[in-house]
Length: 65
Image (cartoon, rainbow, N blue to C red; front, side):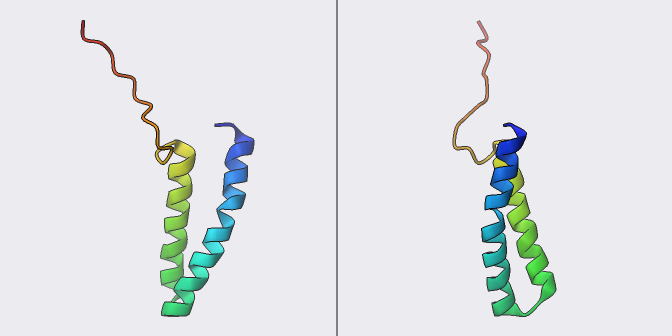
């Protein structure tokens, strides 16, 4: 994945970061909970750019023959 696409995905992930952080703040009124929620959004971003949430199996299985 090229750098421009990773940057574009990061920009798009700002929206769920704000929404999810605001929702957690309105429910719990705790900055620690918001920090955990933002860490979860960052974890999802890392899984997206590393290809773990791509939905395709990219493993190459060698033929034992």
